[in-house]
Amino acid sequence: SQQGEEDPQALSIQEGENATMNCSYKTSINNLQWYRQNSGRGLVHLILIRSNEREKHSGRLRVTLDTSKKSSSLLITASRAADTASYFCATDPGNTPLVFGKGTRLSVIA
Amino acid sequence: NAGVMQNPRHLVRRRGQEARLRCSPMKGHSHVYWYRQLPEEGLKFMVYLQKENIIDESGMPKERFSAEFPKEGPSILRIQQVVRGDSAAYFCASSSQSGGAGEQYFGPGTRLTVT
Image (tube, rainbow over all chains, first blue to last red; front, side, top):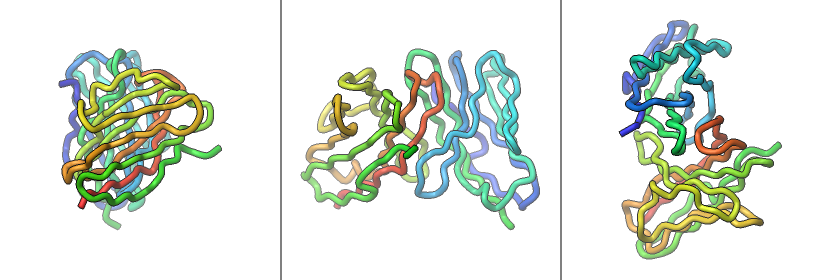
């Protein structure tokens, strides 16, 4: 399966702390994307990192990609209660649509 | 610029009835994707369509499920003779690029409950 797998499945932190989520995948990819889903809502695109990129920033988000290890990490710095959501990685193998993982449920406690 | 629209937001059907879910992509997007999500699970790809064409339906069950994206109007996901196992949230996404080359914009989803 090419499915990305997020780790951990659930994460609970205090407001102000950093949250790190990891994603592993199995085949070569063109890009990897991270999405957020608030409870009962659709997914919102956060960031896309291409296979030739190693790190990308967007506000309080930092994404890394290690194609040799087939893994990516999403770091949220100075977390807020509003960051509470499920976070999914999705991989683009190039000849099929995006493949989503099962997600990490993040709870940020005020 | 309206986002991806889905309707209805909630749909209740009895076993054996038909469910019809609609999705209007973002303006200018010609690529539409349907996903199914079970509680506490990730998204499972079902089908990828462009106008009047099914590009990839590898994730769609062979029976009872069908999808279309006509030249005019929204994309439709149809489930015939629904069963309890069809209860899930169904999300539609659209993009301006094919496959997974670019970001996808998601609708709010349709929550189907089969009683």
